[in-house]
Length: 118
Image (cartoon, rainbow, N blue to C red; front, top):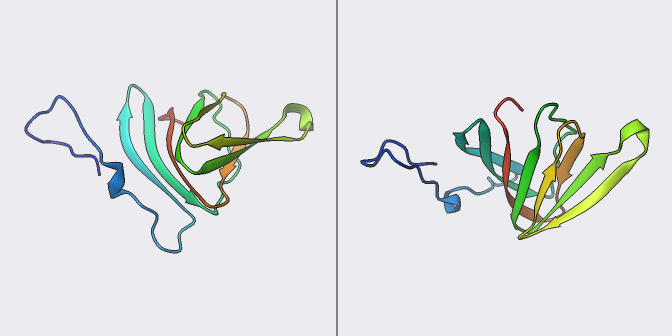
């Protein structure tokens, strides 16, 4: 968990090693920080998927720390689905209004940033 209320109120710190996937759970999303209208989450996905979703007024950013994240983007006007592989060390920004879902075959560890209202 982020450490708040220490002797120095000028910063907060989170140790990502404290977060891991519970046994038999396909995914974990743990809120780390909220700042400047942004929600920062640490996520672990193992052979799992999210539901389709769309952020109407904001972009979503995914930084893959370990493994591979698979992203499906639903193309406008029912033109199909675009599949994207995001590898460790890469970052992808999904623009506002684009319907998407994320999943993994294996284990993926990532940071996700989106608007607090998203």
